[in-house]
Length: 375
Ligand SMILES: Nc1ncnc2c1ncn2[C@@H]1O[C@H](COP(=O)(O)OP(=O)(O)OP(=O)(O)O)[C@@H](O)[C@H]1O
Ligand SMILES: [Mg+2]
Image (cartoon, rainbow, N blue to C red; front, side, top):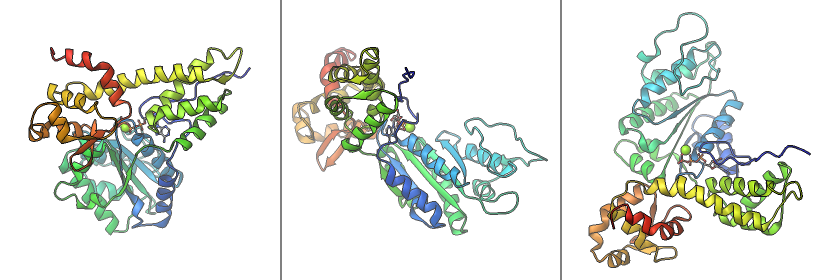
């Protein structure tokens, strides 16, 4: 019998067995690389809540660029974003064909031949300019990706935007993609002097259609040597709510349940899916909800609990009524919750939870949550 290996990857940044619902953005990006300087998808902003698939998408875009012989520099926002970028670009330009892949998380000693000038003395614009030329002097494509941009300093983003803008004006083959949680990214790029980044092509990672989720779940399961009944597949897809991280968690746990009876039957049943989904949601609560709600002030937790009376959208005026206070006294808490992407405005005066199963989690853990504040 073929060895059964769980194909699902419920880990941040891990490449899923099937990348679901991203054909259009991958195609747009790939076309943009062919189309040349000025193609809109060469400048892209990817936003979405935690676990919606931003990092994985950045990796895929990087792969597309590499396949076309482009140089790719991936960075995650940190205090030293610009200097890390300059160092990474310097190494890139120093490599013999300027196309060797380095582990950019670590600044390594220069390899390659001959003396290499100290790249840390270059400005970002110079470093990027050099990375767009091969040693032979031939032009070279350069993709820069930055993840977790909501944590970047505005001054760093301004410097990066300005360098990219200049390179585009100089008709260099450059692409820039940045990703982060929606509100944080929007706050940042709506700041002064970041107009250029505001024009980036927007890719908001919302829910993936459930029919696509079903097709991909079935394909991954069958490829692994198992099968799934139609009813079980339906239950699995529905439980994911089209949310990338949940797709992997549900797939992983349901598959594990079924492996227990693999000696007798290789088909995933509704019983497996029901048990597996429960396990998946337990993991999801710990990894997503508990992290999101950690160290919130009591008033913010009360705000969330007041929202659980509604099935869907909540009116901010009604939330204030329920908490027996004025809407204006809750403004700062609402803002905090929006900024952390726990809730989001749906219309003026209305909010909803941003991540699936938040309401269920809050209802189940209400007493435990309040007990943390001595209530
Ligand atoms: N298009 C997709 N189809 C199926 N699974 C996906 C897809 N994109 C991401 N995943 C899975 O979802 C999980 C989260 O992905 P990823 O780490 O990229 O999310 P993220 O938005 O970067 O999260 P965070 O905001 O926490 O950094 C991973 O387990 C990954 O394998
Ligand atoms: Mg990420």
